[in-house]
Length: 353
Image (cartoon, rainbow, N blue to C red; front, side, top):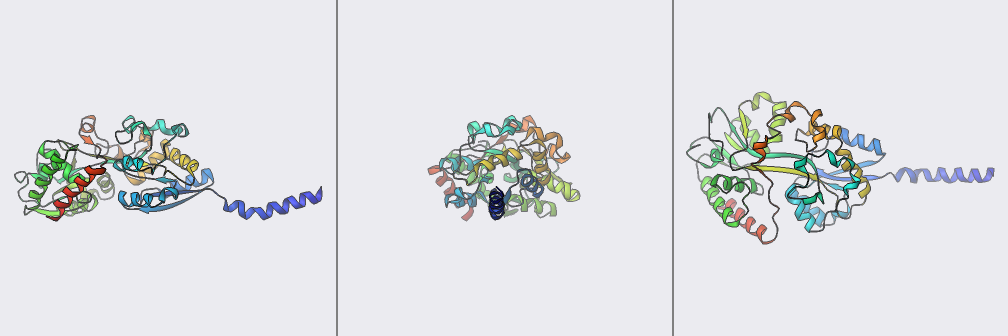
């Protein structure tokens, strides 16, 4: 009997390094600087696991990685709303079993059963925000609350302004809204009309170029431009860190509409550890963890249960649109096939002419 015990203890000691190395690992593929490190440590401690994070800087980079086999390398990814439909159609995402997400009920109603993911089949909202018009109130005293601040030379005959570059969707859809098609325009004829307006706008002497949201906000703060398209989360962050630099910046959801965007947690189709992925997603959906994430990011939380724990700026009208403003917010359409080719051709023509 003693010999058996000694043999058992010897076998156990031999196995200890193997047991230690068998610690579960969650592979998280996320945007840079988009996860509070303290939350990662809390999750690792609670479940005695290791989280390995890698990063991407655009949805197109994420898509390319998953299509190249990354759908079997990562457990959780964070695509934006317009990418969900495209990734699901390509077989890159796992269909979710919401019975494994006890905190799903914490999501606010407007973030359940969304147009880009009916029945919440593939995506769980992570953070959200709006992309709309910002201008310098010292230059524009009482402008019309429309995209005319950018597109109407009578409203802005002389002050420098910028339009958003990147995929061009925010700029073309803003032009659509100004022309009366609403921000949700989805017809090729409407995009062509919007492109014509953007080409005309490029010829104005006070147009400074295509500038993405974050640098456009910095240019507004420095007085380089007087109007541009920015992210409300960036502005909320700057209001907290640089109140003097932002005191003359006003952010509005113009008539005709603007973009509401949602970044979502999703599980790749062949994730190596889907069970741990469910635990992580459910952990982020906890009320206090959700608030901790948004307070760190200074982006809005889709988690209704988190709201009592949010910092003051995240409960302001800048971050939380009114019911009337919600009526003017649109999710970008998930383009694919011939429609995507047509859109890309139109935008490429705008950028190169």
